Image (cartoon, rainbow, N blue to C red; front, top):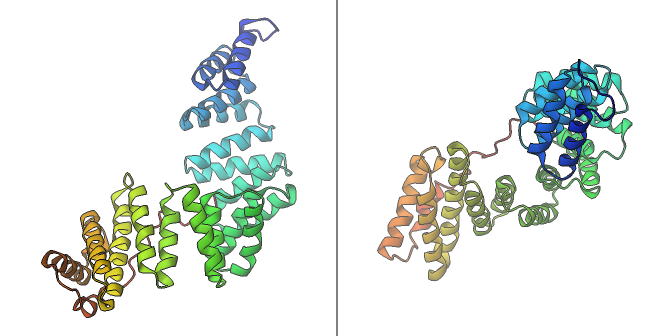
Length: 347
Protein backbone atom coordinates (compact mmCIF):
# COMPACT_ATOMS: atom_id res chain seq x y z
CA UNK A 1 0.00 0.00 0.00
CA UNK A 2 1.40 3.44 -0.91
CA UNK A 3 2.24 5.76 1.93
CA UNK A 4 2.01 9.55 2.07
CA UNK A 5 4.01 9.87 5.28
CA UNK A 6 6.65 12.65 5.31
CA UNK A 7 9.86 11.69 3.61
CA UNK A 8 8.38 9.02 1.35
CA UNK A 9 8.77 8.94 -2.42
CA UNK A 10 5.17 10.16 -2.76
CA UNK A 11 6.04 13.26 -0.77
CA UNK A 12 9.20 13.73 -2.81
CA UNK A 13 7.24 13.56 -6.08
CA UNK A 14 4.73 16.13 -4.84
CA UNK A 15 7.48 18.49 -3.74
CA UNK A 16 9.34 18.05 -7.03
CA UNK A 17 6.14 18.76 -8.94
CA UNK A 18 5.47 21.90 -6.91
CA UNK A 19 9.02 23.14 -7.52
CA UNK A 20 8.84 22.50 -11.27
CA UNK A 21 5.46 24.22 -11.44
CA UNK A 22 6.76 27.34 -9.65
CA UNK A 23 9.66 27.45 -12.14
CA UNK A 24 7.29 27.26 -15.11
CA UNK A 25 8.42 23.75 -16.06
CA UNK A 26 4.91 22.42 -16.58
CA UNK A 27 5.83 19.27 -18.50
CA UNK A 28 8.09 18.17 -15.66
CA UNK A 29 5.50 19.21 -13.10
CA UNK A 30 2.84 17.13 -14.82
CA UNK A 31 5.20 14.14 -14.87
CA UNK A 32 5.80 14.38 -11.12
CA UNK A 33 2.13 14.84 -10.27
CA UNK A 34 1.21 11.93 -12.56
CA UNK A 35 3.56 9.79 -10.50
CA UNK A 36 1.76 10.90 -7.33
CA UNK A 37 -1.69 9.86 -8.57
CA UNK A 38 -0.31 6.67 -10.10
CA UNK A 39 0.98 5.69 -6.66
CA UNK A 40 -2.19 6.81 -4.89
CA UNK A 41 -5.29 7.43 -6.99
CA UNK A 42 -7.15 8.90 -4.02
CA UNK A 43 -4.75 11.86 -3.84
CA UNK A 44 -7.20 14.67 -4.61
CA UNK A 45 -4.49 17.31 -4.25
CA UNK A 46 -2.29 15.39 -6.67
CA UNK A 47 -5.09 15.23 -9.24
CA UNK A 48 -5.79 18.94 -8.81
CA UNK A 49 -2.12 19.85 -9.21
CA UNK A 50 -1.88 17.55 -12.22
CA UNK A 51 -4.85 19.38 -13.74
CA UNK A 52 -3.14 22.72 -13.14
CA UNK A 53 0.11 21.56 -14.79
CA UNK A 54 -1.68 20.05 -17.77
CA UNK A 55 -3.74 23.23 -18.17
CA UNK A 56 -0.66 25.43 -18.16
CA UNK A 57 1.06 23.31 -20.78
CA UNK A 58 -2.02 23.47 -23.04
CA UNK A 59 -3.40 19.96 -22.50
CA UNK A 60 -7.06 20.82 -21.97
CA UNK A 61 -8.41 17.29 -22.30
CA UNK A 62 -5.83 16.03 -19.82
CA UNK A 63 -6.69 18.87 -17.44
CA UNK A 64 -10.39 18.02 -17.62
CA UNK A 65 -9.63 14.39 -16.81
CA UNK A 66 -7.47 15.36 -13.82
CA UNK A 67 -9.90 17.96 -12.47
CA UNK A 68 -12.76 15.48 -12.78
CA UNK A 69 -10.84 12.92 -10.76
CA UNK A 70 -10.05 15.59 -8.15
CA UNK A 71 -13.76 16.42 -7.87
CA UNK A 72 -14.62 12.73 -7.54
CA UNK A 73 -12.08 12.30 -4.76
CA UNK A 74 -13.19 15.41 -2.85
CA UNK A 75 -16.81 15.99 -3.90
CA UNK A 76 -17.47 18.55 -1.17
CA UNK A 77 -14.62 20.87 -2.22
CA UNK A 78 -15.95 23.77 -4.33
CA UNK A 79 -12.57 24.61 -5.81
CA UNK A 80 -12.29 21.25 -7.55
CA UNK A 81 -15.69 21.68 -9.19
CA UNK A 82 -14.83 25.26 -10.14
CA UNK A 83 -11.57 24.18 -11.80
CA UNK A 84 -13.45 21.49 -13.69
CA UNK A 85 -16.08 23.95 -14.90
CA UNK A 86 -13.39 26.37 -16.10
CA UNK A 87 -11.67 23.67 -18.15
CA UNK A 88 -14.97 22.43 -19.57
CA UNK A 89 -15.93 25.97 -20.64
CA UNK A 90 -12.64 26.31 -22.50
CA UNK A 91 -13.53 23.12 -24.38
CA UNK A 92 -17.06 24.41 -25.20
CA UNK A 93 -18.58 21.53 -23.23
CA UNK A 94 -21.32 23.73 -21.86
CA UNK A 95 -23.82 21.26 -20.31
CA UNK A 96 -21.03 19.60 -18.31
CA UNK A 97 -19.61 23.01 -17.39
CA UNK A 98 -22.99 24.15 -16.10
CA UNK A 99 -23.28 21.02 -13.98
CA UNK A 100 -19.80 21.43 -12.49
CA UNK A 101 -20.35 25.14 -11.81
CA UNK A 102 -23.67 24.37 -10.13
CA UNK A 103 -21.85 21.98 -7.79
CA UNK A 104 -19.32 24.73 -7.02
CA UNK A 105 -21.86 27.43 -6.17
CA UNK A 106 -23.98 25.01 -4.16
CA UNK A 107 -20.97 24.13 -2.02
CA UNK A 108 -19.63 27.68 -1.80
CA UNK A 109 -22.23 30.37 -2.64
CA UNK A 110 -19.70 33.15 -2.03
CA UNK A 111 -17.42 31.98 -4.86
CA UNK A 112 -18.15 34.72 -7.42
CA UNK A 113 -16.00 33.21 -10.15
CA UNK A 114 -18.02 30.01 -9.98
CA UNK A 115 -21.24 32.01 -10.47
CA UNK A 116 -19.57 33.70 -13.43
CA UNK A 117 -18.71 30.30 -14.93
CA UNK A 118 -22.29 29.19 -14.44
CA UNK A 119 -23.49 32.32 -16.22
CA UNK A 120 -21.22 31.70 -19.21
CA UNK A 121 -22.43 28.11 -19.48
CA UNK A 122 -26.09 29.06 -19.15
CA UNK A 123 -25.78 31.79 -21.76
CA UNK A 124 -24.12 29.37 -24.19
CA UNK A 125 -27.05 27.01 -23.65
CA UNK A 126 -29.53 29.78 -24.49
CA UNK A 127 -30.64 30.56 -20.93
CA UNK A 128 -30.03 34.32 -20.81
CA UNK A 129 -32.34 34.88 -17.86
CA UNK A 130 -30.47 32.25 -15.86
CA UNK A 131 -27.17 33.75 -16.99
CA UNK A 132 -28.18 37.22 -15.79
CA UNK A 133 -29.28 35.82 -12.44
CA UNK A 134 -25.94 34.04 -12.03
CA UNK A 135 -23.97 37.17 -12.91
CA UNK A 136 -25.85 39.24 -10.36
CA UNK A 137 -25.16 36.53 -7.77
CA UNK A 138 -21.47 36.67 -8.75
CA UNK A 139 -21.37 40.41 -8.07
CA UNK A 140 -23.23 40.00 -4.78
CA UNK A 141 -20.59 37.48 -3.72
CA UNK A 142 -17.60 39.43 -5.09
CA UNK A 143 -18.48 43.09 -5.82
CA UNK A 144 -15.03 43.72 -7.31
CA UNK A 145 -15.23 40.87 -9.84
CA UNK A 146 -14.73 42.95 -13.00
CA UNK A 147 -15.10 40.03 -15.41
CA UNK A 148 -18.61 39.32 -14.09
CA UNK A 149 -19.49 43.02 -14.39
CA UNK A 150 -18.24 43.07 -17.99
CA UNK A 151 -20.17 39.90 -18.77
CA UNK A 152 -23.34 41.40 -17.30
CA UNK A 153 -22.90 44.47 -19.49
CA UNK A 154 -22.34 42.30 -22.55
CA UNK A 155 -25.44 40.27 -21.79
CA UNK A 156 -27.60 43.37 -21.35
CA UNK A 157 -26.22 44.87 -24.56
CA UNK A 158 -27.02 41.70 -26.51
CA UNK A 159 -30.57 41.91 -25.17
CA UNK A 160 -30.92 45.47 -26.49
CA UNK A 161 -30.79 47.01 -22.99
CA UNK A 162 -28.11 49.53 -23.93
CA UNK A 163 -28.81 52.05 -21.19
CA UNK A 164 -28.46 49.37 -18.52
CA UNK A 165 -25.40 47.87 -20.21
CA UNK A 166 -23.30 51.03 -20.40
CA UNK A 167 -22.67 51.47 -16.68
CA UNK A 168 -21.37 47.94 -15.92
CA UNK A 169 -19.29 47.90 -19.10
CA UNK A 170 -17.71 51.28 -18.39
CA UNK A 171 -17.06 50.39 -14.77
CA UNK A 172 -15.54 47.02 -15.64
CA UNK A 173 -13.27 48.70 -18.17
CA UNK A 174 -12.06 51.21 -15.56
CA UNK A 175 -11.50 48.33 -13.15
CA UNK A 176 -9.07 46.73 -15.62
CA UNK A 177 -11.26 44.42 -17.68
CA UNK A 178 -9.86 45.75 -20.97
CA UNK A 179 -9.93 42.55 -23.04
CA UNK A 180 -11.06 42.93 -26.68
CA UNK A 181 -14.59 41.63 -26.07
CA UNK A 182 -15.25 44.08 -23.23
CA UNK A 183 -13.75 46.90 -25.30
CA UNK A 184 -15.91 46.00 -28.30
CA UNK A 185 -19.05 45.82 -26.17
CA UNK A 186 -18.35 49.19 -24.56
CA UNK A 187 -17.65 50.74 -27.97
CA UNK A 188 -20.92 49.34 -29.34
CA UNK A 189 -22.85 50.70 -26.36
CA UNK A 190 -21.33 54.16 -26.73
CA UNK A 191 -21.90 54.14 -30.46
CA UNK A 192 -25.55 53.19 -29.95
CA UNK A 193 -25.85 56.10 -27.53
CA UNK A 194 -24.52 58.40 -30.25
CA UNK A 195 -21.03 58.93 -28.82
CA UNK A 196 -19.28 57.84 -32.01
CA UNK A 197 -16.02 59.66 -31.27
CA UNK A 198 -15.58 57.88 -27.93
CA UNK A 199 -16.43 54.54 -29.53
CA UNK A 200 -13.86 55.08 -32.27
CA UNK A 201 -11.22 56.11 -29.75
CA UNK A 202 -11.79 52.88 -27.82
CA UNK A 203 -11.41 50.78 -30.95
CA UNK A 204 -8.31 52.64 -32.16
CA UNK A 205 -6.69 52.14 -28.78
CA UNK A 206 -7.69 48.48 -28.94
CA UNK A 207 -6.15 47.74 -32.33
CA UNK A 208 -2.97 49.49 -31.26
CA UNK A 209 -2.77 47.24 -28.19
CA UNK A 210 -3.85 44.01 -29.91
CA UNK A 211 -3.33 44.39 -33.68
CA UNK A 212 -3.94 40.67 -34.20
CA UNK A 213 -7.60 40.98 -33.08
CA UNK A 214 -9.59 40.88 -36.30
CA UNK A 215 -12.92 41.66 -34.62
CA UNK A 216 -11.63 44.99 -33.30
CA UNK A 217 -10.43 45.96 -36.79
CA UNK A 218 -13.78 44.97 -38.31
CA UNK A 219 -15.73 46.97 -35.73
CA UNK A 220 -13.50 49.96 -36.43
CA UNK A 221 -14.06 49.56 -40.16
CA UNK A 222 -17.82 49.32 -39.72
CA UNK A 223 -17.92 52.45 -37.58
CA UNK A 224 -15.87 54.43 -40.09
CA UNK A 225 -17.93 53.13 -43.01
CA UNK A 226 -21.17 54.16 -41.32
CA UNK A 227 -19.91 57.66 -40.54
CA UNK A 228 -18.94 58.17 -44.21
CA UNK A 229 -15.20 57.52 -44.16
CA UNK A 230 -14.69 54.74 -46.74
CA UNK A 231 -10.93 55.24 -46.92
CA UNK A 232 -10.57 54.92 -43.14
CA UNK A 233 -12.85 51.88 -43.21
CA UNK A 234 -10.67 50.35 -45.93
CA UNK A 235 -7.57 50.86 -43.79
CA UNK A 236 -9.25 48.90 -41.00
CA UNK A 237 -10.54 46.11 -43.24
CA UNK A 238 -7.13 45.70 -44.87
CA UNK A 239 -5.61 45.29 -41.40
CA UNK A 240 -8.35 42.80 -40.50
CA UNK A 241 -7.62 40.80 -43.65
CA UNK A 242 -3.95 40.66 -42.76
CA UNK A 243 -4.69 39.52 -39.20
CA UNK A 244 -7.14 36.88 -40.47
CA UNK A 245 -4.70 35.28 -42.92
CA UNK A 246 -4.68 31.94 -41.06
CA UNK A 247 -8.38 31.80 -40.18
CA UNK A 248 -11.15 29.74 -41.72
CA UNK A 249 -12.04 30.61 -45.34
CA UNK A 250 -15.64 31.61 -44.61
CA UNK A 251 -14.54 34.20 -42.07
CA UNK A 252 -11.78 35.52 -44.34
CA UNK A 253 -14.26 35.66 -47.19
CA UNK A 254 -16.63 37.91 -45.29
CA UNK A 255 -13.77 40.24 -44.37
CA UNK A 256 -12.72 40.25 -48.03
CA UNK A 257 -16.24 41.31 -48.98
CA UNK A 258 -16.08 44.21 -46.55
CA UNK A 259 -12.66 45.19 -47.84
CA UNK A 260 -13.86 45.16 -51.44
CA UNK A 261 -16.98 47.13 -50.52
CA UNK A 262 -14.86 49.81 -48.84
CA UNK A 263 -12.42 49.89 -51.75
CA UNK A 264 -15.28 50.46 -54.20
CA UNK A 265 -16.73 53.16 -51.94
CA UNK A 266 -13.31 54.85 -51.84
CA UNK A 267 -13.25 54.94 -55.64
CA UNK A 268 -16.83 56.23 -55.66
CA UNK A 269 -15.79 59.10 -53.37
CA UNK A 270 -12.68 59.92 -55.41
CA UNK A 271 -14.17 59.70 -58.91
CA UNK A 272 -16.15 62.95 -59.06
CA UNK A 273 -13.48 64.97 -57.20
CA UNK A 274 -11.10 65.13 -60.16
CA UNK A 275 -8.22 64.10 -57.90
CA UNK A 276 -6.40 61.76 -60.25
CA UNK A 277 -3.63 60.57 -57.87
CA UNK A 278 -6.24 59.78 -55.23
CA UNK A 279 -8.37 57.97 -57.78
CA UNK A 280 -5.49 55.87 -59.07
CA UNK A 281 -4.52 54.95 -55.51
CA UNK A 282 -8.12 53.94 -54.81
CA UNK A 283 -8.26 51.85 -57.98
CA UNK A 284 -5.06 50.11 -57.01
CA UNK A 285 -6.56 49.24 -53.64
CA UNK A 286 -9.55 47.75 -55.47
CA UNK A 287 -7.13 45.49 -57.34
CA UNK A 288 -5.59 44.47 -54.03
CA UNK A 289 -9.03 43.71 -52.61
CA UNK A 290 -9.94 41.70 -55.70
CA UNK A 291 -6.76 39.64 -55.37
CA UNK A 292 -7.68 38.86 -51.76
CA UNK A 293 -11.36 38.13 -52.40
CA UNK A 294 -12.56 34.56 -51.91
CA UNK A 295 -15.42 32.68 -53.59
CA UNK A 296 -17.26 32.62 -50.27
CA UNK A 297 -17.34 36.41 -50.08
CA UNK A 298 -20.12 38.74 -51.19
CA UNK A 299 -17.50 40.13 -53.58
CA UNK A 300 -18.68 37.48 -56.01
CA UNK A 301 -22.19 38.97 -56.09
CA UNK A 302 -22.97 39.95 -59.73
CA UNK A 303 -23.42 43.68 -59.09
CA UNK A 304 -20.26 43.89 -56.99
CA UNK A 305 -18.35 41.81 -59.51
CA UNK A 306 -19.39 44.15 -62.33
CA UNK A 307 -18.34 47.23 -60.35
CA UNK A 308 -15.08 45.57 -59.38
CA UNK A 309 -14.33 44.73 -63.00
CA UNK A 310 -15.06 48.29 -64.11
CA UNK A 311 -12.58 49.60 -61.55
CA UNK A 312 -9.88 47.17 -62.58
CA UNK A 313 -10.45 48.00 -66.25
CA UNK A 314 -10.27 51.72 -65.49
CA UNK A 315 -6.94 51.20 -63.78
CA UNK A 316 -5.59 49.13 -66.67
CA UNK A 317 -6.81 51.66 -69.24
CA UNK A 318 -5.42 54.59 -67.25
CA UNK A 319 -8.86 56.20 -67.52
CA UNK A 320 -9.83 59.38 -65.69
CA UNK A 321 -12.56 57.53 -63.78
CA UNK A 322 -15.23 60.22 -63.99
CA UNK A 323 -17.70 57.67 -65.35
CA UNK A 324 -17.23 55.29 -62.42
CA UNK A 325 -19.50 57.05 -59.94
CA UNK A 326 -22.83 56.07 -61.46
CA UNK A 327 -21.56 52.59 -62.31
CA UNK A 328 -20.64 51.92 -58.66
CA UNK A 329 -23.80 53.21 -57.00
CA UNK A 330 -25.68 49.92 -57.23
CA UNK A 331 -22.86 47.86 -55.76
CA UNK A 332 -22.34 49.75 -52.52
CA UNK A 333 -24.46 47.76 -50.12
CA UNK A 334 -22.82 46.62 -46.91
CA UNK A 335 -21.99 42.90 -46.91
CA UNK A 336 -22.74 40.42 -44.17
CA UNK A 337 -21.08 40.94 -40.80
CA UNK A 338 -18.07 38.66 -40.45
CA UNK A 339 -18.10 38.05 -36.67
CA UNK A 340 -17.27 34.52 -35.58
CA UNK A 341 -19.23 34.72 -32.35
CA UNK A 342 -21.51 31.82 -31.51
CA UNK A 343 -24.01 34.32 -30.18
CA UNK A 344 -22.65 34.32 -26.65
CA UNK A 345 -21.87 37.90 -25.57
CA UNK A 346 -20.03 36.81 -22.45
CA UNK A 347 -16.88 34.80 -21.86
